[in-house]
Image (cartoon, rainbow, N blue to C red):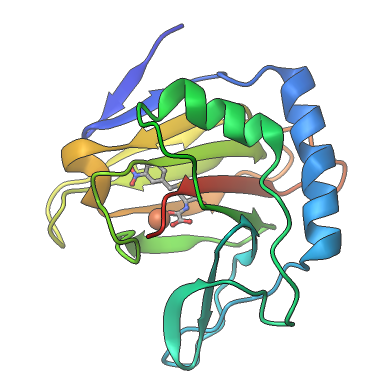
Length: 200
Ligand code: MD5
Ligand code: FE
């Protein structure tokens, strides 16, 4: 399979076949039933357009107190288990022996986007972040490890897996837009991105 290098980010197109994508979406229905999606609010009080929940020992949350990993969902329940298909992808591509402690679930409906940012709420930046894309295609942008400077963009499609490790672990990245109707995986449309992380 062709592998793409985007400023040090490894993109593995179509790593997950359609049957695995369907099964993973089925598992994610159980995750969001147990731990409902919510719109995080930034410390400045701005609501994010992406809805989120998590699976695993930790979930990523943001509210007026700032962002951080928490053991419990904002509504007080424990996070459900990380879907086994996602754990299998982590074993295949992460290159590390530790299992992920958090599977952040991002849901993009039409118009949702994610501005350029670094993922630096984790304790050990030697641990990679692994991303799985499901549903509609998204324009993913990767820059440098410092703010500003040149960026590169690529369309991420359903079943694509991206690995952020080494120097690229602290690269600025974001989602500029999602193309409505570009995938039949999710009956209601939209895009799901999973990111698997070692937290502490
Ligand atoms: C997403 N999520 O598609 C984006 C991009 C996040 C986040 O950025 O923090 O939830 S997927 C994250 C990712 C994976 C692999 C590589 C890189 C980012 N990267 O190059 O920076 O919902
Ligand atoms: Fe990120």
